[in-house]
Image 1 (cartoon, rainbow, N blue to C red):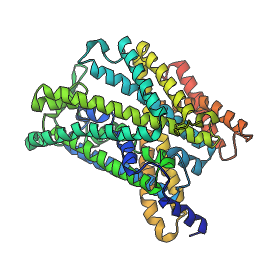
Image 2 (image 1 turned 180 degrees about the vertical axis):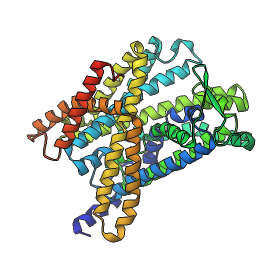
Image 3 (image 1 turned 135 degrees about the vertical axis):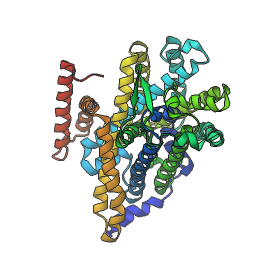
Image 4 (image 1 turned 90 degrees about the vertical axis):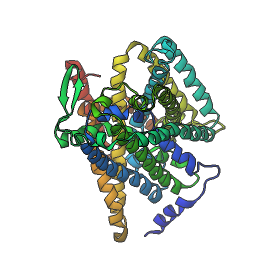
Length: 490
């Protein structure tokens, strides 16, 4: 092993003064992964798969996401000099422009997702205070705007303090899920769980008609499409690698956070199938976890889970605001995005990135008041935009593994290969239409990239960047044509 590589790996254990420790880093992973998804999981899964295919799908998903978690862990240890997680790995492996697309797409995904948290938060409050309606009434938008700028002020007071708050909120939102698991364990009935185990006769009502679940493989595929979205956030600690007290804690936080969330998801999903018939779960309104809890313990269960959901949404929003600011600030310091996005205040908060992020959220909150249906599709686009950064990270892990000494190469290659294959599947599952719209979003943001490069006195594009630029340009042209002829819609 070269002396340079030895120096890099030695830095894994170097503590950084006042950096984020294992607890706050793990809370970033858990806090960003547990938002609204787990609270709506029972009905979404029940509409897709019977218990047998469900367990097969979770096995495949668990292996794929574990491989991705191990990739982030290994990269954190092998390349502690690379900062910014999904952005840094994409840039190190494939050049500045691919690095830009990873950061830009991740950022758009994150802040649009944050708007969805606000809408769902006030829609949940609407069950207690009808004035908030479905989360997009004028009182809801005004209240969400106030909450947005309160969080903004909190983060301006320092990232370190905000992550401590996130740790407390993360613990608070896990408690209701643990209580549900305990209650559901006592209510679990094996006869309900094993009834029509492979989904041969169960039908799910949809639009007034009853539809079967399809073959076992159809059910596995359908439930895996749902799991695409519930694991987003697994990369949270790696994005904050530059602020970690020890770089080795980044990898540990990723794996610990993933395994903890996977255990919660599995328990909530499987136990719900043993508490109610599958067809009844599929018919529940969101958050369907509240419906299952109501079935087990009575009306107070709905209130309890709704409160848990609101705490979860607040925590997820805070975690993602932190990630939004960080994912822009690091490329700004690398002159991949305009330098003003990397400006920090005396507390170390990236103020330029934070202001841009929250102004975009504010505009989108107003947008939801006038365009609720279009907004729903934008959330799906946001979810798709985060998948390509996963692919770049997994592919870079392959490159790093191939450079390892022969004795260590196999151990490094195995998770990298599995993670890359799984990431390719995630991108495929996301759908071509969203990839084309993502290309258009990348092309629009390219203006920021070119400006940053010109300001630094650098040529915007090198030979390494051209293939990605060509793909983005062709995808954007296809997107514009699709919008023009009506074949592509948001």
